[in-house]
Image (cartoon, rainbow, N blue to C red; front, side, top):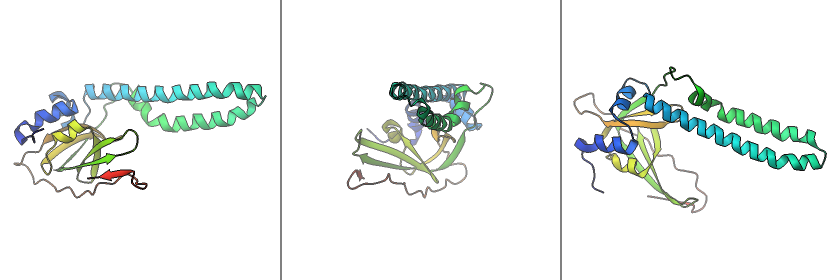
Length: 199
């Protein structure tokens, strides 16, 4: 794949990150667009539904055994622990999943010279992993997004702060204030033996 130029970089990023001009305008104003808010809501609802589905399956598997042994009271302990954990784990997602549409979510922005990083994950599933870094923040991204950015170029990126979801990005104009250098040293995943190989 050829290295993108600054001129066509904006279109490449729009395609890779799946955002349009309306999304970008909302992000510039410090907000999520309606389209981005809807995607966030669906993702949160799916996650909550998946967690509670697994909880229901576990309860269904445990209940017959406790009933046969006459230890139904003992079932209350793991159930209480499970529902407490689920409550804590899913609480941050409820505003995303069931919040009123008029409650505008905020986006944040960073402006600086971008760094790229990739490493090979030999666990399961094995394969390349990609990150980008700007100022003191780093984001895990897909390969297409990684390749859409130019190493060392100046960008403004917009992200959802709670879960650090990358929303949109644009090349920063050289005519504005100086572009800050990114000093981040990418945090490496925990290494056990030769599990990870880095470039």
